[in-house]
Image (cartoon, rainbow, N blue to C red):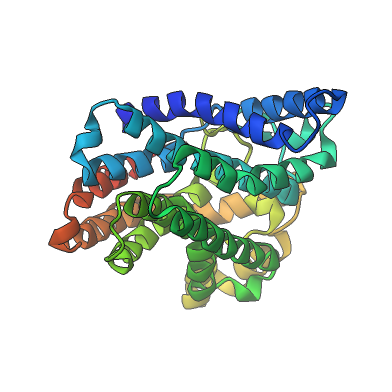
Length: 352
């Protein structure tokens, strides 16, 4: 993964040039607007795309190199596929800009969110749209003439549809405590996180490698990994160190349907004689409030329910289940097994 990250970092330099060029090309080259757009796009890219973990693009590159061993050496062909994989980081930034606005977040990667930067504000919404609308252009520049280029672009469109539906489920669940069930949570996570975070990078790699079968088998495992990834994000929102995670958690204040909230309600409703109706009522009246005392009350309820310890047990057990599923991937695509196994290993006990 480290080697792939370095490849992605290098590719992003070229992708940035392509992004700035294709956006600015929509305007007359001799006008001041041309220079204005170029400046904005460079600034946007440097502050929202550069500096992430690049886990999605790295997963895609790792998978491509596993399926096509000849790409383990640094060649022009490898550079091209790395640039295609790097578009996943533009997609990620598109979602994060919009998500931060909807959640009214303060920080991202240890810095103020893009929409909170001086001179940006709500124009960040249009910035996000620009990033999204030029992804396919960059893919076509990176892989001109690729036999599966149209499939690659279609996969992105379908991934985006699924993610936006997931975001709808996320926002429509806010403060709707009666809807905080495992069925709702699993459906929401599948759509808003698992597909674009894990399956789409692998799907891109399969399409680029001209492996057009067995996507269903991979999807099952990818969705399991995505569930682990999102549940960890939920955990870190409450128990993570903002200096390490790079963001201040607001899931409790925002009234989000999370792993911790769903499990807390499940435990309290399952054994009311143990926890008492009062605790459930305290949860309902405090959850979703920005009042610091109520936020602390929810955290005390989580502690009383021992959710921190329970999550670590779940994480260990579920990662074992995922690795079992990985071992059952069809032999014809067995090069994926060590890639996915390594990805899961890096997730366990992550702190950011």
